[in-house]
Image 1 (cartoon, rainbow over the protein chains, first blue to last red):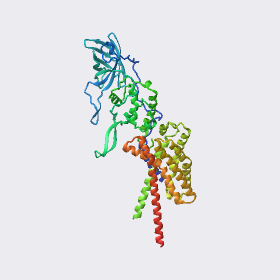
Image 2 (cartoon, helix red, strand yellow):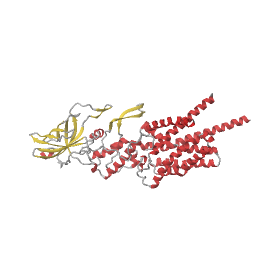
Image 3 (cartoon, rainbow over the protein chains, first blue to last red):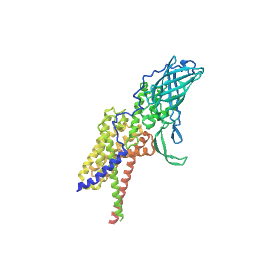
Image 4 (cartoon, helix red, strand yellow):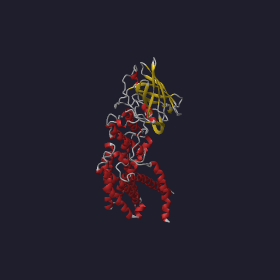
Length: 321
Length: 227
């Protein structure tokens, strides 16, 4: 009888513990040794891309001046809703594109484009009239997002302007662009400008007390990285454990991905793309930059990943870290 | 009527107290289980990569983590007067487990971990001082019990268990501050490394003070009655 009474108390107690405790300590799924996934590189990487011997003439006078990186925004040519965070436009579906003209022989032109983590070769024809070079080029067609470029580059100018039409029915089948010729040079010292990384897929609720505005309530805004994210440069020097251990998850994420951006990594992740596309120095050149990292960057990435994972798993839990 | 009401509040308070202890002990058990099997990169150790290579740190860490659960559990039943009256032998045995684990294993191990604590000197000094006081208070309580000084034994055990419970309160404060303000991780760590045990110790001192006052009042009453 006595043991029955004990059962009567303990069973509900255990069920209660099980259900409540789970909220304060998340169940860890999978192996904890597994590292946080980096914005992944596509598996079916298109044919080996030839990096053009960049012609340093930024104004086009001869045919050889066409060769090089043409960089700018790849904008929707259709009415597409923009993504808003409050009153601000977080993303208008534009992506920074790099149209690289790799070689020209006769009327044949070969190149590739880098946009939104997608590197695709193209082939086409080039013709010249009195005022400009005209290019019609076709992507291979074995990718869902392949299409056709039509653009012109005016003589004595440094802009490449044109349109792109998708082969298949995709959400944004027509795009337009006005690109300028740029030369990519890895610069570890390059800094983030004053824009902030915003993740419009995540909402946060933050308690705000503003004495001046006499406001005490909750701010339901979208997740944004803090100014810490642009304060630290993980390419120029080794970050210390003390510095990184006091950074929040979102800031670590941006600092780490800034290393990728400096090397011209083209981001698949929409939020990172929207953030880095705004940086004037940023030129997407590749979907895999892992081999380009310096020793400092490799060490920093390891350190940053460690604390990113720790913050992800333990920051808002009943526990220490 | 007043007496019945008082008893009711006392009972409710007791049930809430033991329910809370049980709940948080369960959470602590979940945390402990993250370290089984013992791995160098498990949970908290992920941020200790700079010291986890040292054998004495690893010994201290795992000794602390594995023994702490027994300390916490052994302490739960010790403060019940009914338990002490009815099962004095069990009280002594649980007390031995509690005290000797703290004095010889969990406390010294906590001190070594404190030396290498995250967050620089602010939290390192907090954790080292916590470990030293924990061992001293527990030892004082044992010595008082051996000497037969039961009031002193009680008082020192209040202090000792207040520090034991800092394992729970530290983590609770951290959870609460993050939930409320989303501070930077090390900023909150600095705060809770002190608040986690100083707060408990203050509460213990208040309890000891009021128990003493109550006792004095009773003695005065008895003296007045006698007179």
